[in-house]
Image (cartoon, rainbow, N blue to C red):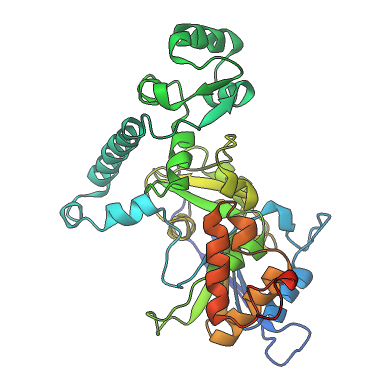
Length: 367
């Protein structure tokens, strides 16, 4: 259905498409066991089975080459949510937004307060880490990429800090972490990424390049305490397009992404991951929706069949979770492959307590 109207603001296009809704009812179509709603920059999908999840990507995406009619799968990054009420917001912003003393602040005061607390939080982590992360070493190439400086400035920086650096081809970052952050030498996002790896509440939101890995994180845990939860959710974000659109502030908000270079982030490497960071703390879904509704998003920036955000809602029932996890582990997507530490082996085996024939190895025998 196409509905045209005249926009009340004269400086915007007089005629704007305010709703471009395309529903494809597929409940009775075994070849496409899902429903999809395509609305401007957003796709919303509902499905119930593993078969529906797979066919969604087979039917609606180009897997190899770009065409005009379908989005290219590799243009998107993905994230899985166990609960459908969870927002696309960082752990730091969840903690920040729960503070009762901040709810009376206006937007400008709130943004300033968030920035102050974020800076203090990062510096506290840097100093608290001293002596605790002795194995966090970076190669010369990685260190140079973190510094983000010219060759001349890079060499000068190394010379000035030579007494604090390890000998050889690697450098212990932690010994100079706090000093370098304060001087603006070290990219703060890489320190956030290190903290995220160890459980620090950060303004980063982690994503992965595989929708199947995202589905694993959506289904790995049971929802025994959330009986009213109707769907698990897998989000897809056309990250480069969105970051480019918000490279300069839009209504005061920016969104960036980055992929840490440090080899310390083994989980991120195994999970084919990267991070987004929203500078003023608004969740991504609300940011895109508000920007579009306010008429600040130029529709020429995206194609109708190439959405910026995809929201896949999967019915949350035990049989669906069981089928997803069994097929995903057959694809070698499980705790063992995604978590390189012993913790991954332990989590993998724990799932096998309730999921019959899940955590079994051919060589271990019948017991």
